[in-house]
Image (tube, rainbow, N blue to C red; front, side, top):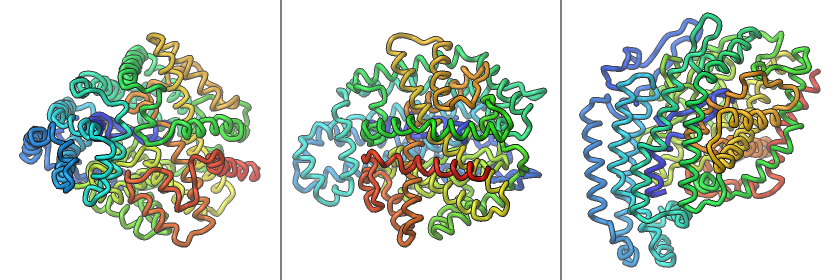
Length: 640
């Protein structure tokens, strides 16, 4: 938080949502001029014969255009505001805290929050513009220039949280106990948790300024390299997103072509990806060592405001459940395909002999909104605003960031959703997922720029719950056994991808970062770690074919947000438990649920779960969520 929050907003505020092959979503720490925008972006819609009219977002709610006077003015004003803030408060906070009136301290916090919101607006716009076409040099330059200027400007803010943490605990506690500063108590408490790991002012400034040429630069190299890649599938040269989409194609030869094309394309660039990964892992190790973190993932746990033993319990529970979940399900799926083992490119294949269809945009929209409305009209009304206000960008376009994300921007504006909608049933679930994020972000916004952001472990709750509502609504409408089986199988695969696969990703990261401390890793060594972890998690029914050892390279989370991935498993298991509570007692649940989302980052997970009778520190808690997945697999086995 504080100075750290500014750095995270600049370098990591744009958090990813699922890795592309686990249900597709990633977000780039993301560079456009109005004149550079294609006409479609100015009109806001694009037609597709099979999908209908797909919406394109209107970023004018943030700024009119890249060369707009408003954007240029805010850049200047933000830099001036940062300098003025430092001139007014640097070296004075201890005296302001000791003043019993609190007037000076609350004024400082409020001014800091206003500046934080403006910085966030500038970088949100630059990032979203860049995400629209990461291959465009003009957009890349726009984003890079904005990032450099905001990083430079925000250097003047670094002192603020550092000085707050030098104030005697008793003095700050007394100040924070009184209104109106008590409104910011959760934020101040979070800052305090960073205290053992903060460095002196000059070192913090060096870390902050060097981020532009360090971590951020390597992140951008990854993004632009991945965007430029083309994979030869048959006679076509495809970008990452459509290539990954073919792994769900009904045609087995197409799936094989796509799987082999991914391996070939990644393999040609594997040294670059290995260099990026090695450099960022070493960069993190240096930072962790200077800040005194003991475990490779401790910085993430602190950022998530979750205890290490809670995460360890989750990981252990999922590891022990591999045979009952992924191993069991893929064995069943192989039987449906009439084989004992399936190649990895068939892992997410549609079921055999089940007709597939394209879901048009209008149908997808009504499906999700109806599911939301059945749970809470208020929730549906918020989701409707994303369609009415052109807050969604749905078409697949060359250069567009792959996957999907919901970007909160800042409380003074509103969130935006990016999709690469291709009409698959899973794309409908992705829409439900990202709108869940969006609803959460809208509800949390009134907490303000300092307390609206939600720890990643809870940030996935609303998204996964939105998926569950949509799935249950669709399941209730099924009329045939094959239709029901296909829907159940799709949900089980999504849950396995969200829980088992993400914990396998986390395990891979732990092994990689631990090994990197002993020296640089070759691409072959990274591939060996990847294969070992994936074989353990997927089980004997999935055959990892030659080339799969390169697949680690396209997962953006490993680059942008190390150890982020366990948040998906946390969120999925949490939602399964929440949904179990909902099924048993629906009266008043929606109100309690929306209140939980509206809390944003103001409460710890233990406080938020208390009204539902749930406790993530209970060793049996994770078994509840995993048991729901196991139950769905049992339902599928019973249909045999």
